Image (cartoon, rainbow over all chains, first blue to last red; front, side, top):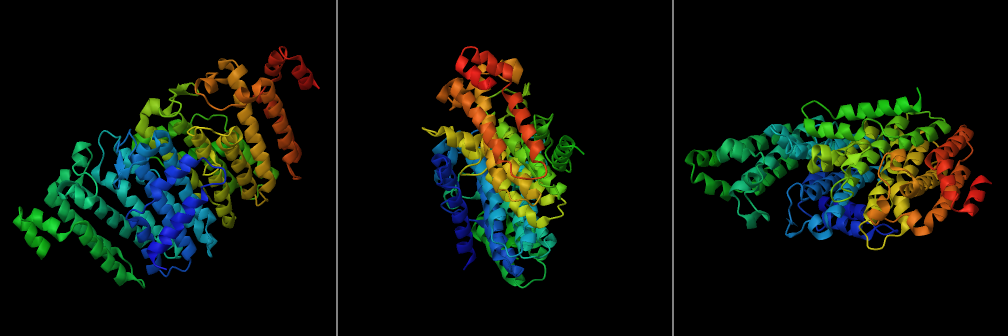
Length: 301
Length: 301
């Protein structure tokens, strides 16, 4: 079974487990709305890819970890869209949860998704149950204080956020957690994978900052110019577009170098390169670099 | 070490674990504000009491479970106080978290508290790590869909909530989880303790409904008449005060009968009786029963 089937199967089972049996139907609907139809599922894909690279000898635990990571990501999107944060009426071309179900159910859907995430680890048919607590620890660290995504979002409420702390917590932490949880699910040492995930997450965040400035809204399925509009810290606004593009390339290289010796190392390296090109396509770089010849030369080197 | 010291020690360590080390200080302060100074700590006390009654042979796991339960309770209070729910400016005579730190940090503090709860189970020095997943499952069920406290709160967003489903989920579920997690931490079968906790939680909810109608605000440290004001389902408004008082007594009896044979059974029974009297003191019942002689006779029988 390929990773996408595994992930969607695990998420479908997770969401179904909270439905029916006399629970409140509108909250159940709001939770389903938050998780389906699928987004890019980048984080659970990363979790499964790392587990596979490490041998994946406890696939039920891997799938539970991947689902947990994605449910936490969905929870963060639901709460980020709330009126008190981004006040976003849309998400992936559909009404956001608070727009569709009201603010109260959006708060509760986020809460319930966080709990549902951890429930996956309690309920999975792991063949190595002694690993569960370690996987749980990595998953929790990715969203917890002081460096997880809740901390990342909270940097937006501080008078003088440190850009790197903000980005690492807001995005990098859950990527690092996904990679470490994948390794731990397969019984491998999570340490190198924390570095790998951290670099990859930071690369995604910088790519997002870049796309917020230079992409066409239709191309990325969401409005651009949001960082400036919301006064959010961003690599592109802090270092300029050229600086942000250089940072992105350095992060992708760091990612590839962090991959330890393992069965699936080559496949993972190829995946990272392909993903980097998808995130910041050459034509996007070229269009910008046409206005900046030095960068064009570097990009084509 | 008595239960209160164990619980406060575990909570102090949990909250401190998320502070400093480069995390956002205002979220850290909002989390601390949510957990300290201590409230009644009824749920973690219940968790520790049940574990002790069952032998408590893995106290680190018991303490982690008790802290997790209380952190989830604190999270629910922070989110319940939000403007979109109760819009409460005060909690236990102090500003509520959103009043003190703003709505965004209140949303994030609730989220971070939920995560911190589960982190306790990942990080504890359990001597029986194979029990952790089971304890995690009980703790999660108490707050999850379809019957945990997130579901309970969501019944307030349904057009026609079923009173008993609402009460069991909103209060009973976390009591049941506390009792079951205490038993599971000590390696005992959680089944009878789920019944015990469920009855006890429902008794607390009914007592709360009763106190909302007949107590003096000073006596219970919060405004009364809130159920009617917010149109919330309540035993007292649904069955009348006499009906609610009868329901309370039946629940306390059910609780006592549910306690299985174990080392600490007698001590627990005495604790339940004392707690019932504290919740609905005789003078409160008597003052009301003076207007309802049949009930007075029953109360004094």
